[in-house]
Every structure is written in C-alpha cells, then in structure tokens.
Image (cartoon, rainbow, N blue to C red; front, side, top):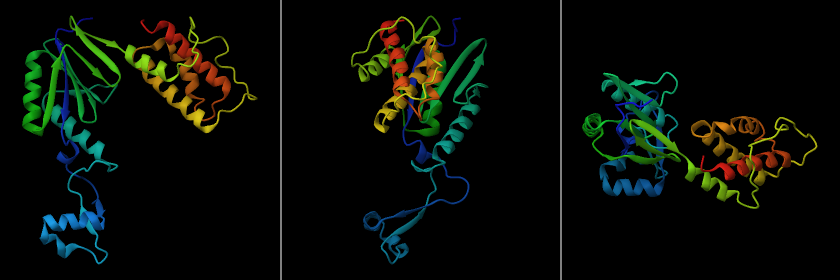
Length: 262
C-alpha cells in the first residue's frame, strides 16, 4: 500500500564518520613505523621525546580509526543514539532500518555503515539534513525521486518504493555469459540430489561458484524470491562445490537470463 510519508528518496554520506566517533572500552594502541614517526615529529617537534629507541611511536586511539575491529559497531551505536533522539526507532526485524511514524506517515532510514538511505517527505528531509549537519558537520545529501543503492535501483512513485535490480542481474550474467542457455524454470526435480562421485571444482572455480551464489542470495532476498529454493540449496554447497552444482547454478542463471525483465 502507498505511504503518504514517503514522497522523496535521498542518500546521506557522513564524511569521516569513524574519526567523529569516540573509542570506548579497553585502550587501543597503534604503532607508527619509522617513516610515519619522522613525519609526525617534523610537524609536531614536541612529540620527539616519546619516540622509542627503535624510532617508532606508540599512540593511543581516541577515535574509532577505520580498520579497528570495533570501529563500525561504535559508529553504529553513535548514529542510532542520534537517530533515537530524532524520534526514530529500530525495526524489530532489521536493526539497520530506523523508522518513525507521525500521523500515519512512515519515514524510513536505511543504514549501511556511513551511507544512509532516507525515504520521507520534503519537510522531514529538511529536518534530517539540518540535524545531520548540526551533529556531524561534513555530510553530503542527494535528494531525488530515484537512487541506486547497493545494487538496487529504487524509485519513489505514488508513495511506494519500487525496487529494480535489472542492472545487478545484467552484470551478474555478463560475468557468466559463456554459452549461457535460457531456461523457463530456475531448477528441476533433482535440485536436492547430490552425486557423491561428481568432479569437485578446483579452488579457483569454487571461489567463482561461491561468489556467484552469494550474489544470487543477495538478489533473492531483495527482488527475486522465485529463485529462493535452488539458491538456498546451493548455499550449502559453496565449500565443496562439484561440477553437478555448477550445472545447477548455470540453470538459475539461465532462468534469470530469460526472465531478466520480470
């Protein structure tokens, strides 16, 4: 059903999100090598007294530097706390979706690290933009009627969000285009049959198989539930894929080739 709250769609990118996030928990230290230490001392001569005999420098992190194990979680905690203060609450089914309901209008924010997708009306868009600027200073916000986001092309029309992943499918088919035959169904009755004598794929082939199955699972959960059954089975085969499994994968791809405009 249409939602009167979702009129436009926007992408917010928070610049330097991690270095705007304070470290928490046990102290974390990094070791600067000789080259970096020299550069630091050239800029900040007073640091020289802390340089080790080996010419290195130990620094305690005060901000969640990108690459730290806990950096993403600390940023997520900071961001969701900020959004809670704006009246948003986490979806009970997906903690990366924040929503707010006002007079029957539903506003949504989808979080992917420091990229936030916003579905709201013009008034709420402006409110969110100003709040993000006040809190994080360095942001970009692109408001439109459609956006590409994580392989999805999302279009707002009459209060509804329409998700199209045709470009995602096209790119996937290009990666596996060699003599790809079209099929009217994504699988046959033998999908769950495992031939224990089938030739095992070499490691390079297995990695290609694994990547393709992972991409198809992503597609399945967002736009093509019709291939859920074969992909669910193939997910169980990614660590020990055989030539038989690859044939089953190519059938799914052949089905997508025939139905790419669905």
